[in-house]
Image 1 (cartoon, rainbow, N blue to C red):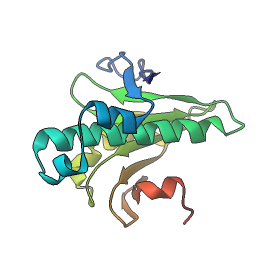
Image 2: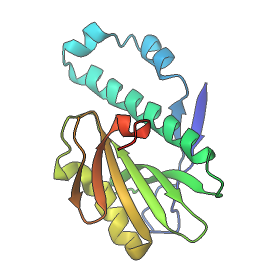
Image 3: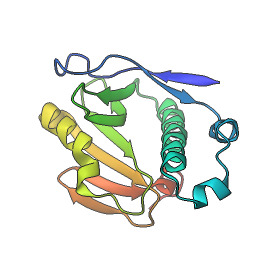
Length: 160
């Protein structure tokens, strides 16, 4: 019913959290258990929107885990969070130490403030940070800044 996503980068910074994140495997079932219906989402009630954001994050993380498992290369996956509140939803590291990071956002646009976790990780890793991707519900892809890009979630399945 659930998958644990281990904390990644525990030795990267002293203030890095080490607890795993738990993601529900079936986001549709989770929505039903939360009674999160389309009608409830249309109310734009903050609690419903937060629950939707959590479910969307779990859905995307589960899809990324599947796609990473198809690769021939052995990769380490996890999430990165600091005690200061910086967070990245999904981190992939290869054997050479190169890292690609993903953040999931529910908006059509991703404001610069939502890229804070990716920026902090890029800063901490330097050249090891290959790229960061903010996946959003919007229709447009663009480069936000150096090695940080914004892509629609459907790019996980639809080639450019």
